Length: 295
Image (cartoon, rainbow, N blue to C red; front, side, top):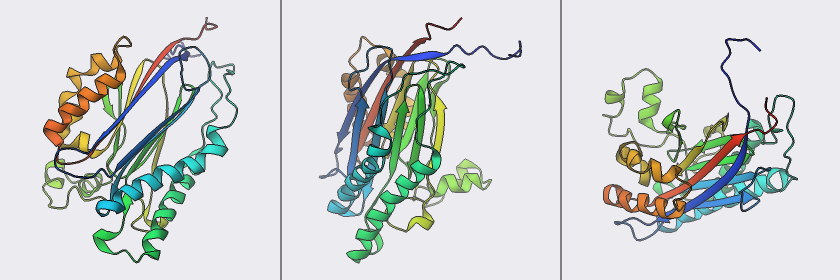
């Protein structure tokens, strides 16, 4: 190893806790969000192999359509990954570089699963001759965990944030909307978001066929205690997370604090700011420890 290379101490995942909440908000009479959490083993309180799949969807397309789309998206993604990955035997073995064997699905497999989601919703739209705003669709953000390895996939404007002591709060996804598309083309952010259609989605699952879906998939490793936050735009609107995270980060990171209670408090505050929309959150709290064989 180069003596100037940064020192990276290999770690084991020692604890994992998950909390989830969805709220209709203060102005709507129905909830089009859908979220689910699955962890194997269900209680992770020791140094051993672990696998998790966490999915959050924000539906669109009318009272029934949006709710159906978000539910179908979660259901179909789970079906695609259940047998091929999630229910496969867990491995806690480490290689010579002190890394867990990475059994996460690769990018192509994850994208194919998302394409299957899109096709299922799209075909229902076609069969039922849904048009315009009546075509149901949904956003999707999903996290796959394999020991200390992470895969993140998303389509639309539901987000994933990461918080660590070294990096602070980081938005790990880029919204698929007109404003961000303009920024990627070199337009300054103020001009890009001055457009009347700045927040219009450029991608969603269901309204169009697979030629128009390009999921973002990213991989990274957990190297320190971490909070992973998945949320619908009902929480992230008006820069809510960035503006109010500092008041809650200690509670989120404190293992003596009930994570579900903290999530509920966060959602309640978000209702004061963004109660115009449904609000959904999945919080994943991960604790790591140095590998005992590292010298």
